[in-house]
Length: 104
Image (cartoon, rainbow, N blue to C red; front, side, top):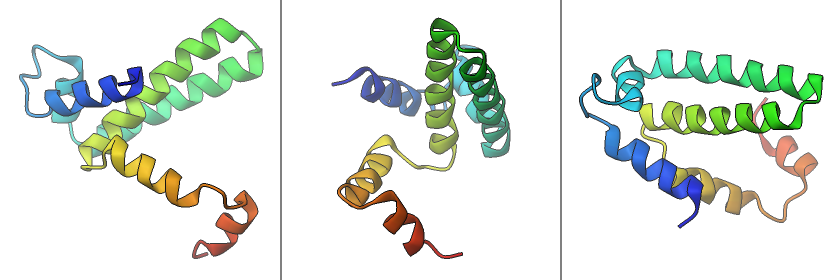
């Protein structure tokens, strides 16, 4: 099991847990909108570090982005397995072709 899979499992296990005992449970208890807001904040921080060019800071912020992405998805009952299945569905398809297939 990869670190990302373990993280996703931990997030799933924290759903419904005591918000006073877990940061993940606290985020989830605030609802999907708050989880999305926090994901957006972390994504902006990662963009800033990418522009600055600090590899270590970008690595740390990217880890935060992945965590908050999984929390946001969990808040809407989207699992890592769901995301992986979508990536597998797209595998081998040109990004340009995939984008052209999407509704406008």
